[in-house]
Length: 403
Image 1: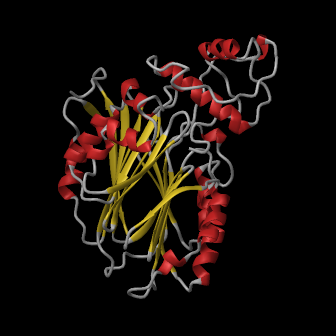
Image 2 (image 1 turned 90 degrees about the vertical axis):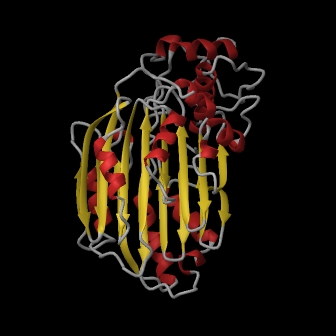
């Protein structure tokens, strides 16, 4: 997804990958290739090796850049890894007149510039009467008349989008209200770029655009936890109340992950949406999706004023999937999502605003999922009329795919 499966700065290859690449390149090995080319090669090989039913005929190898080099210069001790968990920026606008387009009037060229600063580009777009949905090279963007939700992953610089985003909203006479920035703790924080090298740096940068921001960490610092920055604006009671559910899943079952690698039958995002079972998660929604070469997947779902989004990095060394939605949700939906991806561990976040109530849902989150998953921790906080809940789970039983 752009660099969704990009190599880390000090990339190392699995011995099987090296052997396969040497065989394909007549004895040469990768060296000094352009990063984007290297990404394509690495993702292709990992996908092919993780799905033994595929052949190089079904999945022709992309054109590669090779240069002879000594095998002794290749470190094969570590697999390629990628940072899957998304950073999320949400901005509400307070003074949008009824019936006006508001933030939806921000022109496409402005969005291109805003997203460039964040390290992302637009791949696909769909609109209904409520909002505009964009699939990005790194996750998603949703633009309502009175709100913007932007999600980016990898080593993107999401907060760097704030200067041009505030400039674009100022030109339309929009007043920024409640603003939040959130992310899970990262697997490879040393790979992040400014202003995301650590949480203190993120808070300092966020504070330039949000006065008197509140910063919190929900969850144990020694395990999975969630970073949260919010502005001091209280919830506007004239707004629709809403619940936002996010499930971040790690250590996906290989069989589930393989459904997000291109093959003779899984040729595009639409095929992956159906084959994986994602289509059935939000059956009433319009879904537009994107399959990356040779593996990786993103989708946005549009259902009236509500959205859903899924992003998958299937590589076994860093497998990750996220499911987020503002559509009506319950514990049955959570279980269906877990059946699709079969994670070894996952984190749930739930944000409720205004008069929205998710008490029963929150109680279930704190109670757990029976024998399949053990709850490791659960925390919540209430700020400015909003409740933020986070809970972490790990599978206590061997992987079992649903029947």
